[in-house]
Image (cartoon, rainbow, N blue to C red; front, side):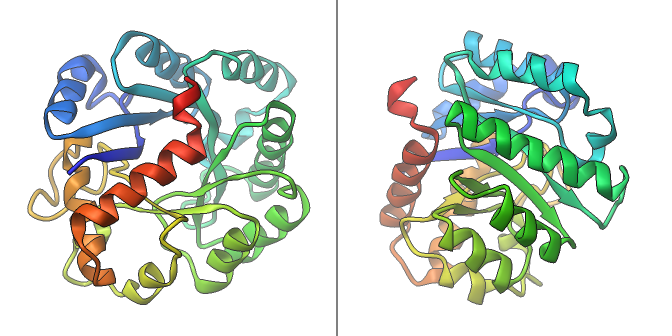
Length: 256
């Protein structure tokens, strides 16, 4: 069955030196496309370079909330220029992370809102990271997020945030943790409409069972899709096909 890895980090130091081989393995596993996601300016540039060089790879450019205190006018000017590259399909990942709090919360909030503003200007979707910050993510989406589209990636948040995103026409993406024995949020997974759900690896993180604890790769995304289908009581091939349609639609891959 064909699947799209809607979120990976091919520029991570654990993958970048063998990115071509990683992508080759993914394509051999019927992974149609991989979106490699930037977390700061340097690896956003690298993501664009990989997308220009490797078949089936597309890029997102942005500033992870961990790095939000690096945001300034010059950085967003450079992100804007990168985002105009034809293989760039989204902005991010941006958002809020109050679990690690690696950057001041005000800086995270400001950078998140700036990504949404830029996304509206460029008509690009936004990839959002939300961890233990549901209330503030909801507030920013309802304020600065009007007229934007995007995805809550590696979803681990609550029902209120999920419903907020869905009400705005956004997508919800699930990663390898749904394969873990102690995964407790199957009810939320089942509640996402079939035309609004994506799957991802978040490589090199969160390798699905039976590879848990090892380096993750995009070739493992079929395992995520299969488990999601099982939890939803759906046929795996039909579910995977739906996620492919959704990823193509969100990222407008046919136009790239």
